[in-house]
Amino acid sequence: LASTMSQVAGALLISGILGNITDRFTLGYVVDFLHFEVNGWAWPSFNVADACITIAAGLLILDSFLNPSPTAPSTSKEGDTVGNSDS
Image 1 (cartoon, rainbow, N blue to C red):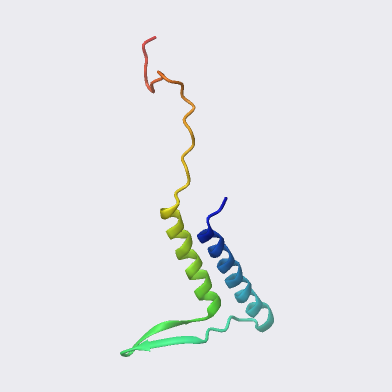
Image 2 (cartoon, rainbow, N blue to C red):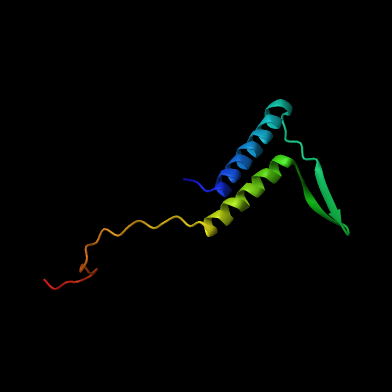
């Protein structure tokens, strides 16, 4: 089962994608309306959909570190050794 964090990330990702696609299909372009400047330095303009996609990516990366997927069980039998060439 997926963790809650990955489920939230999936919801944010889908909503961000749908927001940008809606702009693209209805207007022909994506509207970026958030713009920040601090001491003459400007951050690139973005919109809420972009923020959702970025947050989703961060949550998925964080989730991969906090909840690593289990490794596949070994199929070797007890006593088997790799590279043993006694024959």
